[in-house]
Length: 118
Image (cartoon, rainbow, N blue to C red; front, side, top):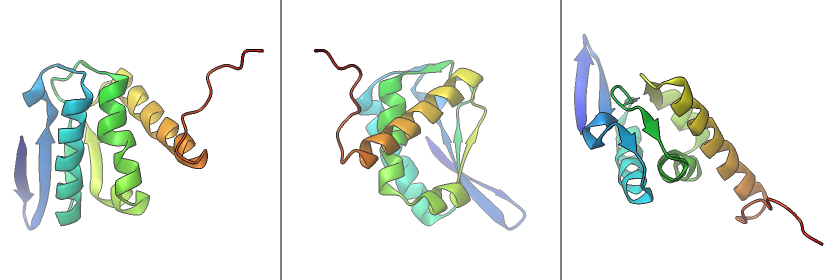
């Protein structure tokens, strides 16, 4: 699942998500992927490769990437983690997962209310 790729003197860890299938859908898998990314980012640059992945569920994206933003500082993620070969739908799901996790943290860990009934 992870592979070190070097060009000249620069090396990057590549995490190929398609090894888990073209549809990534469970929190269980998201948890595994989050652990891989966190460990790799602690060591250096990481490419999270979505080549061959058609769709990732909201649950997977929240578990893998939303929660990751609470475990690894944004500056480290921005500097060391790169998303590659992701289609527009996956990129949208990624943005939503990160945005919603940030909103939850801003609300003290509670999920935002969807509707208020009176």
